Length: 327
Image 1 (cartoon, rainbow, N blue to C red):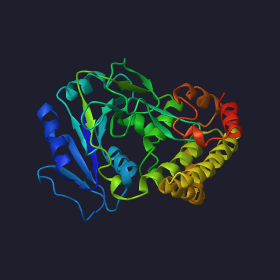
Image 2: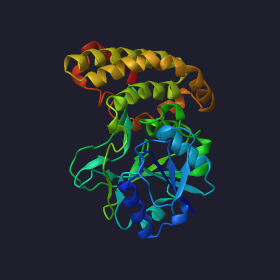
Image 3: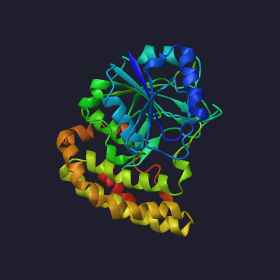
């Protein structure tokens, strides 16, 4: 059995449309759960016949997903954003691939279904998650292994999720799926990525976070540091953090010059606040098999070590440090 978990802070028409699509394809309505994240004043009601689980406070995407997964009693859980739409055939595709690996991800398209939004995940040397082939016109490509499945549409073996430690809820949102996929890979749990040309999964985009100016940038800058703190072996951690810290300062300065004040503020915010998470992160580091071998065996999945870090901002000296450290 599969539990469908849909974290939602705002509810509304997108959510209603998604649920109707799922039920029409054969998903059991009793196994679809809306995790109502907090008590937002702009929440728009959904039909009372749906399974709505109210959290006591806002947990963010990472916390809401983790809450739903750990309270599920099904073998598999399917995580979906509340602003997706899924075409006919998604239910069949899901059942066809669910046993391939502990974690399965699916290609996500833009709202119109004409361009790729997520085609597998990678990460750069600064801890930034990569959405591969983002913005390219839709094209055919074989299924493959990937570093992580996008949390907007991912299928998880529940027991494997728990064995891998689950999402780090301190991330709140953004890059929690990147970090989890990296950690899971190091622990031996693979992610299989599906590019099924017979279905389409389309994403409206920024349904929630787009409402608060600068929120996305603050979360992404901070969480890139947290990804490194969680996954880099102790003997080389200081080198990676030093490099990421140096780049963050350059990125802040150059973003300010270019008029990207939200990115600049996000960089400053991440460095200012990272210390408060060190103690919490140490608990998960002790759990997650931090040795150099487990790090090296996933390095081929991390893709380009500087993309998407705005290479024009990187001095030759900083770039040399990147490649010396990476290779």
